Image (cartoon, rainbow, N blue to C red):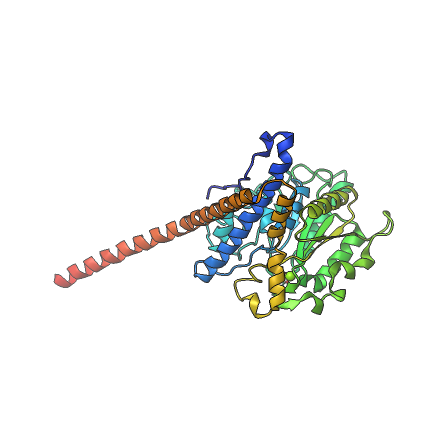
Amino acid sequence: MENTVFQPLYDLDSATSDESFQKEVLNDYYICCVSREASILARKEVLTGKGKFGITGDGKEVAQVALAKAIKKGDWRSGYYRDQTLLFALGEASVEEYFAQLYADPYNDPFSSGRQMMTHFASRLVDEKGNWTDHMHQFNSSSDVSCTAGQMGRAVGLALASKKYRNSSVLDQEGFSEKGQEVVVCTIGDGSTSEGAFWECVNAACVMRIPIAFCVWDDGYAISVPTTYQTTKGSISRAMEGLLIEDSAGTGMRIYVAEAWDYPGLCEMFATGVDKIRQSQIPALFHVRNATQPLGHSTSGSHERYKPAGRILWEREMDCIVAFEAWIVHHKIIDHDSLIEIRKKAKFYARECKKRAWNQYIKPVLQDRDTLRRLIEKIRLKLRFCLVV
Ligand SMILES: Cc1ncc(C[n+]2csc(CCOP(=O)(O)OP(=O)(O)O)c2C)c(N)n1
Ligand SMILES: [Mg+2]
């Protein structure tokens, strides 16, 4: 499939300096809306039998457009299945590709040729001839795996490589590193931080002083188990306080906390924190609290069955996109009616992408079906002829 990189609403290159802030914010809003619509459509596609299983990134959109601003080409991601907005914002996944993976399309899913579940991203690291691609001209994703916390060890390995590149005068860096300036973004859910792999890898990153941005999307649940049942003090950033770095020559990490609906706070946190990691190679935790799951954990269940009614209501009120809209209107960036227009555009765009992906997927299937139908028809005719003779 033609790689239709996610098209922003506005071209920032041609914006005047007065316009650029407004357009950047609205581009972010548009990406969040497209991503949310894609999640809603993906759930419908599974529940109507067109997709196999769905797990989507709804409720984490605003944090991820903010994180995307802090990432540079050459950086790496070792993450998990909630990161679709980040990949859209970075231009590393198109909405068509997202649906192609949901349909298990062997020709048009660039991440796994239909072998992995949806939202399991990966970058192409070698070309068709088996030569390395230029890792410095793309945002790199190591291949996602479905076992929770499976991304942790890879993040450590990648960040250690960045450190080696920084400190070595003999390693050939061309196409792989810019003097070890690369940061590894390691995303994980609140529930998965209870696993051993999380603690081993965070500790190793602190001891070795390697550049990892550990981002916890804390939506308060690991499927049906609330955070309070499995995280000390009910808060991963509080549980990790002992790892706080005390002097810059020592070991440890920086710890940041922001709310999942606080667009300016998230932008500020990631810009400052990721830059510090890049400069110092000291890892950091970014605890993004109070995220929601508007569609529940996955298509294999409904959260209304285990979340208290009050929580469901709270999730609706604290939805990050709703809060983002309120912030935009309050700061007079654009009025509410214009936001509704952008949201409509996003809905239309996501639908069109879904349709294109489905048509691409189904075309060869229908061609095969018609070939088989013609073949059966031929055989039937031959048989009839033989019987007559
Ligand atoms: C090693 C392993 N154990 C269990 C599972 C089943 N599982 C899939 S998602 C999930 C919950 C993860 O919760 P959290 O880390 O909070 O991420 P969220 O889905 O809430 O973003 C579990 C237990 C799994 N995929 N891998
Ligand atoms: Mg969770």
